[in-house]
Image (tube, rainbow, N blue to C red; front, top):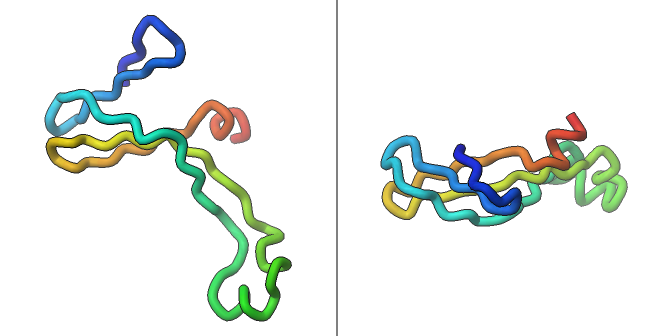
Length: 78
């Protein structure tokens, strides 16, 4: 990952194609909680242990490779 002069702009090159990847933005991933039949039985209580992991996603338009990086908030919470 190569960081440019401005803090807001980051350029990520595809490791396979060595071209700039497109920033897909911040994607929240759900972690923990329950699913399936337990979710039906417990309703909202099934989500008590659930958390969000925010990841920055980049995709290569040439080969389709997707890379995920933990954002600042996620890194700080670890």
